[in-house]
Image 1 (cartoon, helix red, strand yellow):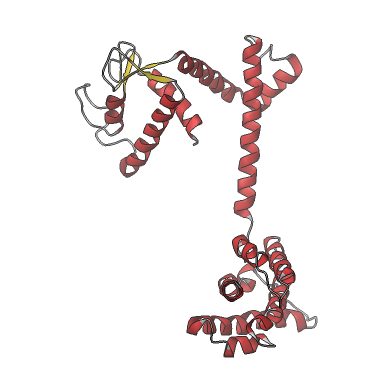
Image 2 (cartoon, rainbow, N blue to C red):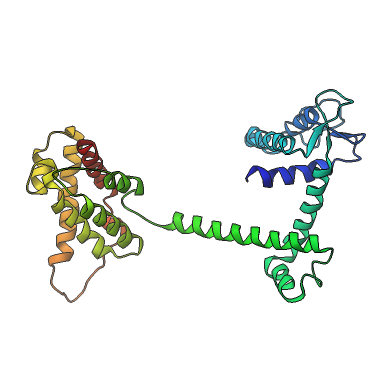
Length: 294
């Protein structure tokens, strides 16, 4: 979570200690006691709630996140030092109390659900479900906008994660940034983009044929006419590069030829994603182009 969201949750959690005479004592919060409880260390506050740290081996990560959130609350003026006490003691400011009220409202609206809250605001002005003052209803609209933004962000992240590619976007960007008096790389960039698009949409015949087209397109960059010459004779990339290019020539070209030149038959099998994916070999090829053209 981002610090603002985590800070709000932490403030609610700290408030829940009120009256328990542990982290929260006489209206004040002790930062060191709180950290000790996170780490399951006994600092004289009675029996610990767990025999072991609650989050096991990942407890240090949780503790760090909580302390970052605590520092955020300090910077935002929601937790302030108690001037009557030593440094570890804090009190919740008026702004912090407002955040707690806001967090409680957000929790109530989470239970109602986004659609119900938005419908009430649109159809009744928030009178039926939301209630409260105009300030509360304005906050409800702010919550709706925040939830919708979160949904949009999650959808975009999911779409980006599910987008299958063969050539890394960063590699295509490097190709697009190349400048040469002898070669125009715009077609190469476009072929790479279309390979990714075809592959991500499950167009595996097109992926294989575009890959073959890429191999036919780039040999002049290496000083040769055909890709077989590159695979067998180019020495600038070392032994590993040469062996990889030979594999690319033998595998990618043969797969493409099989689909491109085979006439219709009584029965067929269709190519799969695995069959046409030469991502590692293509990346080595394109990386070498970037290296020698810089």
